[in-house]
Image 1 (tube, helix red, strand yellow):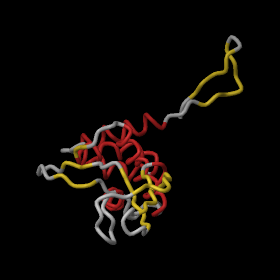
Image 2 (cartoon, rainbow, N blue to C red; image 1 turned 180 degrees about the vertical axis):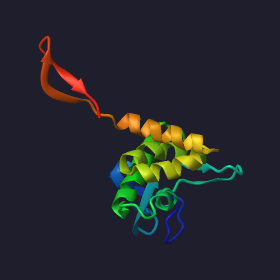
Image 3 (spheres, rainbow, N blue to C red; image 1 turned 180 degrees about the horizontal axis):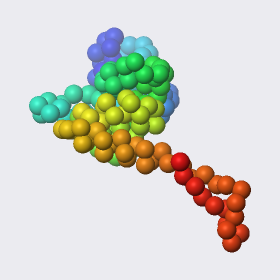
Length: 167
């Protein structure tokens, strides 16, 4: 690491700490030439390959701005969107890949957005799953309804087992 003050090509690490939920390391360094101290922030790079083939750094802000459009007019806060972006980044980083396609990020957003808001999920899914007709929307809505069916237990029993009903 070059010293930012005297450009000496070496430095000594004095202290290291993890930051940003463990995804970055902050290192306090000292230059052996001028003895001045400086800090560095080291992160594992994650590149996004766009449809055009261009690679760029992963950005939580881009995830938030893309999802914000789907959440327009919905009861979703900025804090909800920031948490969603963090979960998406954690999921992608857990895959261990240093490069990921933009479409994979869109697909990784879907389960977290589904937990957040059904309407926003449908809006976003229509783009990333390539809905081409009303039938695609109807199937997605039916799937959402099916996933929302929660078994309910009544006070009745049959052979000692509770009776399960669904709404």
